[in-house]
Image (cartoon, rainbow, N blue to C red):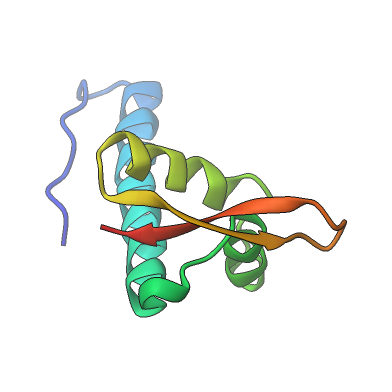
Length: 96
């Protein structure tokens, strides 16, 4: 279980902000675990959104978590492209 993020005791906004960071870390971990499970097949942002939608994630949540992981060097552009449901090419992301 991740360590709690410090917050100002008695401040509900500080506590909520700290709790949201824990949630972000859990969501990043979920995205990374999913990409790792897909090996070199990877996933597009659209595929990530489709996978996590049944868990109640808002449409842009998975992409935002994938971007954070990319900034940390945890995922990378595989060089592969797949078509979206609208026929556009999309980057296939894989775990490093």
